[in-house]
Amino acid sequence: MATLTDSLAAILAGAASPLFGDGMLHRAQAQGGFADVPIRCRTEALWQGTGEPGLPEHRLTLIVLLPGLGTGPTTEDEVTAAGRRWRIAAVEQDPAGSHAILDARPL
Image (tube, rainbow, N blue to C red):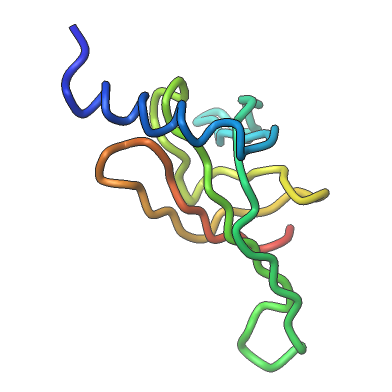
């Protein structure tokens, strides 16, 4: 039986789904390499920096719907979105479990 939190996550993700496009999560495998998992995601922000020392030149903030993914993305994973592949630098998960906000850097 699904918990109340699981039901709320599914409702929130279902309502937001039409606003999201297709992407690919590349889950890091213990034996090396990656396993590809289709995702629904939306680019929240795409920064192109000025090349200042200590700051990344490009940065992506991506929202990923979580229901159906099992476990959420980690900083060991990579993601393909906004026309390129990115390394996940930080993950913030919604308390209801409907989505995660990823901060990513280009490979």
